[in-house]
Image (cartoon, rainbow, N blue to C red; front, side):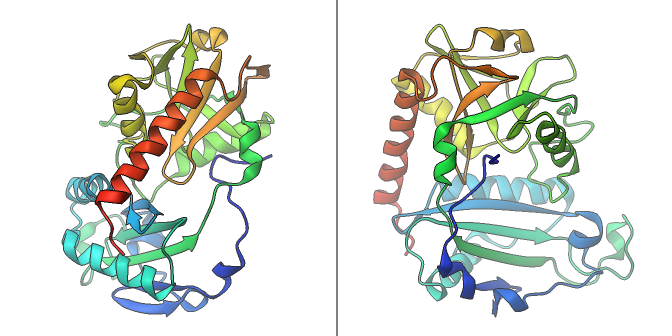
Length: 304
């Protein structure tokens, strides 16, 4: 069993430093208070970024999403220039130039007491940044097994999954159900029973040579997802985006999921049915187009 975010072990991760409220700290010694809003309430937003050839890939899109999330829940996010400077300082301290994963986490900060009221906050938001050497596990090359789960995605007026919130319990519940079904990740449906996303990634499938994916309302606001959609519209593959029922997957010939850590990961099985192709023609065309996008961005946007 392997989740979509599994990675290869790397001994270089044993002695890393992290950045906590502006200070470089050995990773094993980094601490936040139990009265921090992130710990007590999951009250915060985060971003995951990929370091590729000295570049923090698609940095602008990630920081756009982070600042939008902070604005939505009333957390003051530091300026882009300050965040970039901190990430670069951390990457250099860890001697990282390629194949690293950065996680930028900002919580509401220390509270007088653990309750929901943001007026109980004392002082500034907590800013924590980690950076680890990470490459996707080779086990994932065989393709993921997915299972449809009962936990649904939700609209913005209930719980806006387009926010990268620290609270992930809904998706953890979905993953637990998928694991119980013998799968690696769960396919989540929207309240109308249409295909929405997976519990940690966004989901695409191929039928009749056409790439299909959900609309934007009930899935993660994924940067990689957006790049794949752009690549398809630019000619990598025909694309159909919209609401389709679970039964549409019965005709799927190929499928893949997208995320910052794993990039594009193929799917081998859906609800116990082996797909005809794992690295099919369409999936490979999308993978190739995305690789070109990454290299082009890195060539024009070096941060180290």
